[in-house]
Image 1 (cartoon, each protein chain N blue to C red):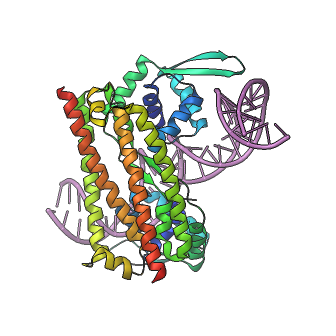
Image 2 (image 1 turned 60 degrees about the vertical axis):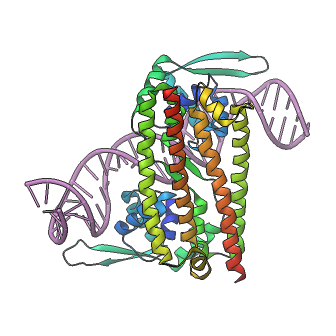
Image 3 (image 1 turned 180 degrees about the horizontal axis):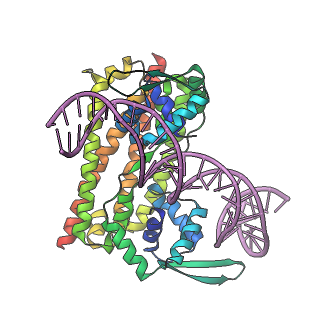
Length: 185
Length: 185
DNA sequence: TTATCCATGTAATCGGTTACATGATTGT
DNA sequence: ACAATCATGTAACCGATTACATGGATAA
């Protein structure tokens, strides 16, 4: 009861092969529900077996066959049922935070490096999200989009992701400043 | 390679029984590395078997015996080694975000309720964190604390947690406003 | 010619959850 | 009387990761 529904949600944006889905995940859903390709293939099979997803094999010139998956009516129904249930509390796992909590055990310079590398990864992700945002807005301003768009869910979740990464970066900068100051003192 | 080190970090703040550790986790580490009691007991056993943690049985009046665990020199060494390794990218899993992305499938009012309940949970956690912050600062202001404290790691991670929950709450309020506006429209 | 993209999987393992079990003590 | 707190575990299961496997097409 987890990736199943995240996949169904992703299929709301249109049919896709397992391969393509895994890329959609990396770009968007991955921020709050990551998944490996193998797991996606396995779960799609299971969804298909349960009739929540329908697949058609598409033959391509000079490329491997592709199994295009789309959400079925039963899939939408099951998704609506699941959405209506109360949500499980969220889980944030971040190794860097654990490491920082043990900062005393290592050299200050090393800790600063770790935080800086992490900051760089966050910045990369932020850049991806900002591109995605442009794709949503297509020149419109935020308010107009939110008033007129057919679906707002994906955009609202993206906004959480954007804010999350910006806060991560600001926090990291501050941590580095604090560690530097203490390193000098 | 995961909870092990989070436990060792928590033991840096002093020896504790599995039961007490699980409570420390709920209060602090749980924000970025949650764990169940059963898992903590199991992992402590394994750490003990590897000599990274030492346990002594304490007999108590009118209470069950308590196995007090403390980190060993080998434990500190292993922890320092692990901290020096690059950190794995973080993972945020949040069912509510997945559900919101599928908001179109359910009634607007229901979606608003889901977000509100979630907001309440975030607010509760924020309150816990704010209490913890007071415990760290003990009346001092932030700058003084960061300059003078022996360990700053745990406080810096707490700051990330505080910001995270505040951002969650602000975001939830905004989501509710958007959904309300669309519900009326 | 080396690497990357497309495209899909299997097998083994591991980290973590759920359900279950026990039992005395203290507070409402 | 009932619930909560202290205190520690076992067993079964499941969701997810890692390693491995295949193979043609295209771009550097």
